[in-house]
Structures are given as structure tokens and as C-alpha cells.
Length: 178
Ligand code: IMP
Ligand code: MG
Image (cartoon, rainbow, N blue to C red):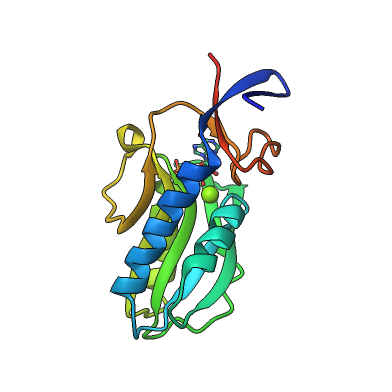
């Protein structure tokens, strides 16, 4: 399947499954090397990172834990409009090495919010692992330790990422056809 239709948009394949797996494995190898002996806690951000997390974890060989969080958006009364609340942190993060596992960092605002929230729980260190980064859209300064792939600004779906809830199931990544 080289092109797919989701609702009103057409998408064409841009990153194939072999390349994705190769880069996910590379990131896992880096984490295995860097965090040996640290018993990291991987915190996967649902929904988008479910597929990345599943594949990444299969390549992690050091002792570790995996858990899942979700960001609930609601319209707040603040000037910034949407406020995102982190839900589902059940683990004690005190003195833990935490690895946030994200599907994509776009403006970086979501990640910034996550770091703020997790930072109040006294972790030893927080590292970011993202499948994708759109470097040209980044609005805030972030130290992203692990990046599987950098992509242009175009909207993408597949491998966990969605367009209006659809398209998460594809094993490849597709870019919108303008
Ligand atoms: P940020 O807060 O701007 O960094 O946005 C991050 C979130 O926006 C991601 O977790 C995705 O849910 C969503 N997002 C950003 N770009 C894309 C895209 O190209 N396709 C699908 N979702 C995206
Ligand atoms: Mg996400």
C-alpha cells in the first residue's frame, strides 16, 4: 500500500517499516549502553507512542520497568487556552531514571508540560526518547537524548500516529499529499 485515504486526506508512504525498525533498534542500543545499571522506568505517552514503545522495548536488554501515561486536554481559563494534565502516573519516581517515550515532538509544548509535571516528583534524571522530531517547528528548548528520525514539517500518520483518530494501525509512516 503506497497511498492511503483517511477521511478527506490522501497520504503517501514516506518511511518504510524496515527503516523505522533500524532506527528504533539504534535508539534501543544507545539506551542499553547509557542506562546500564540504572533500572530505568520507561514512561510511554499514550496513545501515539504505543507502537514505538512496543518495538523499542523488544530491543531493550537491561533491567527496566515500563508504564503508560496519558495527557488529558481540556479548555482552561488560562491565556494559553488548552491545558494538558498528565494522568496515570502510579509509580514512585523518587530517585528513578525516567525515560519518556513519545511518538513525535512538534512544537515541544507537550513535552515541556510533561517535564514540568514529572520534575515535581523528584526523579534522579529524566531523558526523552522520541520516535520523530520536526526540528523546524520546535518552539521551546528541549534536551532530547534519543531521536529515532528527524522529519520535515508535513503532517504524517501511521506507526501509532493518527489523523483524527485514524491511521494509527499502519506499520509504515505516511505523509499527507498536499
Ligand atoms: P507538540 O506539543 O506540538 O510537540 O505536539 C505533539 C503532539 O502533536 C504529538 O504527541 C502528536 O499527538 C501531535 N502531532 C504533531 N505532529 C503530528 C503529525 O504530523 N501527525 C500526527 N500527530 C502529530
Ligand atoms: Mg504524542
